[in-house]
Length: 295
Image (cartoon, rainbow, N blue to C red):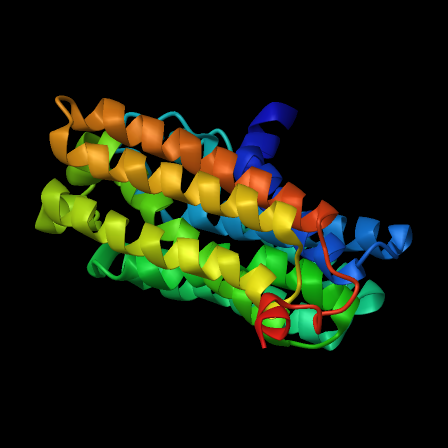
């Protein structure tokens, strides 16, 4: 049963978001790391994300039973009752928000709350089931963790936080569309109006290209504005261009599902690598930017 409760929080999603949370935190720290604050931020964000995922499992019980991938979840089979699921989600959320309130600041707490509301209320309760734009709105929630990590240190929403929000929001789109393509049957069976199902895989491929181009520009802005060094810039540029190349090969793909899985796998690699690079190759002062160098 313990494993069932853990799986209800979607550990894979929590871990993936923690990588970006730490990336944002260390970027803002600029080498001066408050370990106690880092630990509190990590645990607080983990609890809030876990709460959102449990609420999502509760809300999606009816559609999860229609999908092969999710039909055996404890919330679907009844192994964990709806009442217990709600209590569990509320406790996780209360603990997470309380920890962020006590240990961080109102800016970080506000972004945690906004991300939570977007994911649970706007996305899970309504947009996921009724709008092709659900993924776009949900991407703002997925981009919250690195911003929370950054703001936990900076105590302000500045240009660095804005660029992080853009990077991770834009990254969410090709990542999510790739999932929807290789799990097309599941989404179709549950009547979830994701772009590949609603408007076709070709349209989704076009959108993937556009978002990866925008993502590439956003990632480079961290160096242009002066938050990261040239090592980050090179890695970001090379990996983004390679990701774009992979996306373009989708137009010639014999099997769209195989292609989409590869695109999805690389999306995990690129966001992890960039989170690590921004943690290591930060600039002590944002005034040391490429624009300053040019002018």
